[in-house]
Image 1: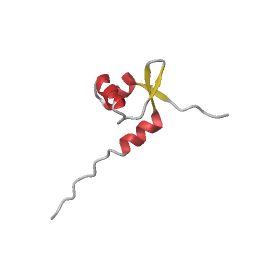
Image 2: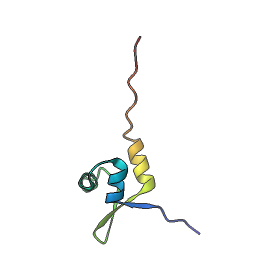
Image 3: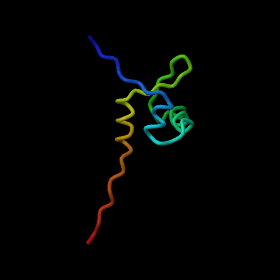
Image 4: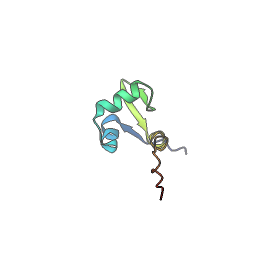
Length: 65
């Protein structure tokens, strides 16, 4: 049996990202954040969100001595 992916709503994802849901909607509408539109609702697949976040990781600055 195939397991379906886990989806988050915009409100749930906003809580994880510690931002307002409007920001999540804007990112999705611009195509910056991968999402699915089902019956007018935006849904975000958990694995895609993790990959999206990892692609935005900022490396720690290198310290010179």
